[in-house]
Length: 384
Image 1 (cartoon, rainbow, N blue to C red):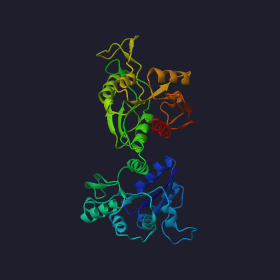
Image 2 (image 1 turned 90 degrees about the horizontal axis):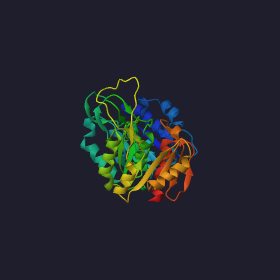
Image 3 (image 1 turned 180 degrees about the horizontal axis):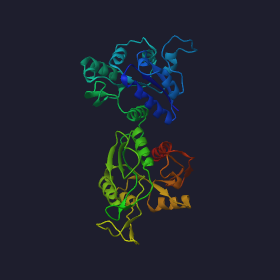
């Protein structure tokens, strides 16, 4: 659990920070909120207190055992979101006249600004000089988006999506970047095999595990490409995304790229069989018999094309999970295999067993798929 301080300044976008807090809490972080007096004019401190589960700091003048700016300066990271033109200028000028600016003045931990303002203010050369100055001192900035502003005009200055802000914060927090300079190919989702223009054969995979792995690999500094079939989740920000649907398309995309990659994490639930015939019209027979043929083992083909490739596979069986996973590990020449339980399909949680090529086995307790992804990436890092 990390202690993250969220500073809120006086902006119409202040209410959007509530969703940022919710995202951090979902990931098990401790969140403490500091509001400037101007921020309280837009959103009640009570809302921040309820979502964060902690007292909200608004002013200095309350008896405390430890000076609040010294206490909160020892957090993992300080996020100022939204940050106004005025507040950025205040910090750049070395002014510390409220709790939030004093915390920033006293801290040596990362400070991240997420500016939000009218386009004219964002483009003002005074602001841009202040941002350059703060960046020189090691402060971070998440640039605003282009979109509809409070004035109803379209321009740069819109507050970024809360999930994107959270992802950027984790990227900054992970200063070790243990996968830096590694090119990582992740597959996710399911494949679909057509039997006619309307119907297809597929499976119940949601894609959540693959997307979580792509997200975590990027946090560790990896250059990540995500190839995904149909899925119930949106692609993580900052990741190269390739959309496919069939096993044939997945095979083509992997084999055309794999020579340039260091790691392949094959999370996609690939169809083991594909129909031998395809009807150009909708099938209307009362009884139907379909003949199938085995699809090629894409993971094996990828390893054959790039022998230095570190490969991670997944195994989902109804019985003898570990035994069959070990057989796949050997047959496919994998470095790691993840034995998955059928209950994880379409679920936000999973219980898995991790097996490396030395047959060292570790069974994890029931965890969120994001937590499982962290464990898998940690194992990859340890093995490479």
